[in-house]
Structure formats: structure tokens, C-alpha cells
Image (cartoon, rainbow, N blue to C red; front, side):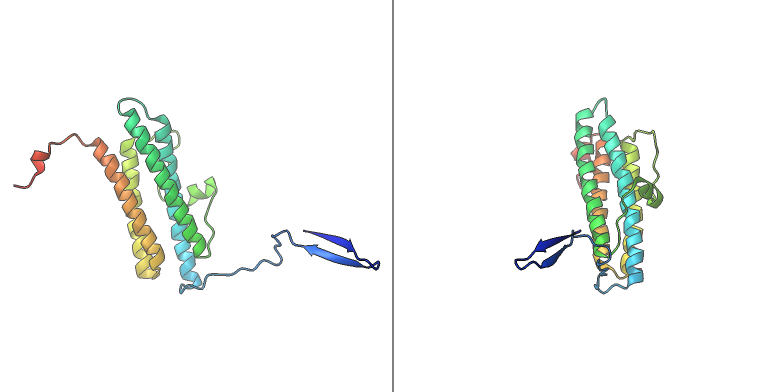
Length: 193
């Protein structure tokens, strides 16, 4: 901020103190009062940052597959990977927002994503559809475990609901990938007798 002197009519000065909107000395740290203790919120924020890191790894792998897909099925896979990349971006945004709602800080650097991720990253490898499917299924297993912790151990129904919704999205993305790999089937073979 700056301080300006404004000359008054009768020779006096008035000091006009202006705040630039970010004064670290006057900033208040207001934690959420939402029925979850500080220790609980801290534990849940750690789960959310782990999940955010996993989502970022999977987003990056999906984007890499989108950029590098070739051969038969190029158009379909290019569109599918693009759609899933966008869904994964939205998931990451929801996770980061929930982290902030709980008074935490969402991680955001590449080093943090690598450090917090429970999913493996494979530098230099272009993921194929099978690897992406396996990563979605790995993510689903982590999410189930984390959702259970959020509801049973921490009684955080808001985060539980978010994680369950993310599970459903990953299940659908995994189903899409799996369906692309399955051979065409005749529906007559699967009709009930």
C-alpha cells in the first residue's frame, strides 16, 4: 500500500492510508466452524491432497495418451481421451475446492503431486488404453478406502459424498475404456431365456 498526503484548504494535511488488499499483518486466519475438529479436518485434507495428486497423475497420463494416440481407432480414442481428460480436470477442481472448504491448502506443484500420489507415474511411457483402465481401477480402490475413512473414522459426510461421486465417475470412465477393448457381442447371446 501507499500513504498519500492530501492538502486541506487551511494549510493542514490529512493522511490517506490506502490498503492494497493484501496486508499480511492484518490478515485473519478464520478456520471453518462446520462440526469437524481441526485434527479431523487436517486428516481429511491429507486424504484430499493424496486424491488430488492421484487425479493429476491420471489426468497427465490421459492427456499424454490423447496427444499420442495413433493407428486404427484414432478418432474414437482421441475423442474419448479428450472427454476423460476434461472430466478428470473437473474432478481435480472439486477436490481442491473441498480442501479449501475444510480450511486446508490444495497442493499445486509438480513436486507435491509426485510426493503425495499413491498412483505410480511412468516417465517416458505413453499410456495405452489398458494402462489407463488399470489406473482408473487403482484410483477406485484408493477412493473406496478413503471414502470409508471419511465416514467411519472422521464422520465427514461432505467429503464422503464427494469421494463416492468421484468413484462413480471413475467407474464410468473405466467402463468406457473396457467396452472399447471388448470384442463386439451379439445381443442374442446374452438375452435371458
